[in-house]
Length: 270
Length: 270
Image (cartoon, rainbow over all chains, first blue to last red; front, side, top):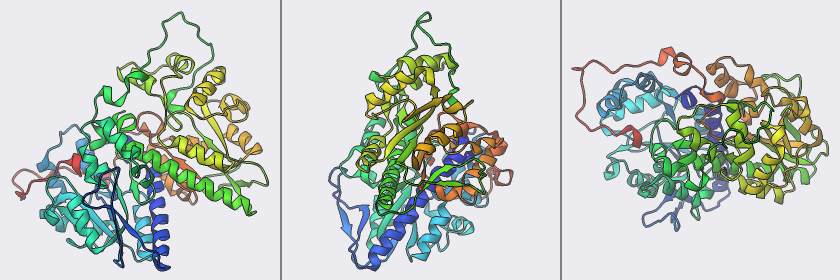
């Protein structure tokens, strides 16, 4: 939480991602203006990570698709409350969707990116697993931060919309891509880009899939833009054996082995 | 640790940063090739965050300056050992510099960026707070991963070089900038870009400085490239009151207040 909500490093990471996205929007809008054919960055049905299919855009209006939580919005109030040690539960989160709209802030750089999108006539569309029941509260929260216009079913898609089930977001992505040419997406979870990532049972499989595929590695920063979130989500699974490969283990040499007398730096300052 | 060393999300963030850096290198090398004047992204002596000075490059050879730990190299063996609960100490870190060279891996995307730099004839220079005493071990570790050539005093600068003191890196940055036109820098700590950030006593000051200055915010992803590190370093300071603003606190409404019956999503899946 210190890292994500309090540090300059995380703010810089967010700016870097949104700066890249803003530039990408300008570049794609410019391509459209000179008549280049664009394709969506939403993987179509039938895709695999190694053989993705991206639909051509035709003349659909351009859009960028954003996740909401910890992508466009920092849930400061909810997380400050959680920091006191309260365990997560869904009723608490539901109460947050309904009553927390004043205790949030925009992710650093997100509104600069929105400004660039508006200048290029590119729609900003939200795809979130927040509840449809609280759609008006979520729309008001986003509008309050400066993300308007937010219209449920057009620029706001929530859990259950487009017959989506569970936490998958593909059904909504496909619905959005029917109307818009999705030139870019941004999120803090791999599932914000394609549900295909959710098939990875183990952390190291997801890690390999995220950057090891024939196409996925080149999409990061080039159509897919990821924001940091070490606080919750799919990035935090993985037991010791998955996170640290067995062939990269180390223990310090026994006392008495040769040592230098030079002062070593504090790790916090490297 | 799960996030940084095990997740696809962190690997994607790293790829995104290095992909941006590789593109930036190509763009700057192309500018140089057509005769544009370049300037260094190292802040010169006398700079402030609000009024930075960047030296013109003249015809110096181009270079990108990288931090080592958790920027170019993931210290898997050291952190797996630390994960067992061993507290950090400098003797242990010193032993790691001397004996851990086989238990590391390159940060995802770093070697792709180096390949792009080599293709453009841009030198890769390391600026680290590792000890000069272990320079040969550190150079061998980097070479083993594919970062060669690594030459102490030319493409490898360590704590104490260039009369640097403590954990500050400016003295070495200025020494590097005397020889090279530093078109870009990459690091995981704000201090990898300018020591001016180290003056922030409180977390929220560093956060504001990192993206709130007249120039700093536009450098992220545009000369300055930041890598994620929520495991150690300057990003992890900050008490509750600095991380979560007092005007963004929230507690759930008391039981009995209106509630929906809709199932709320699990936070891990938003």
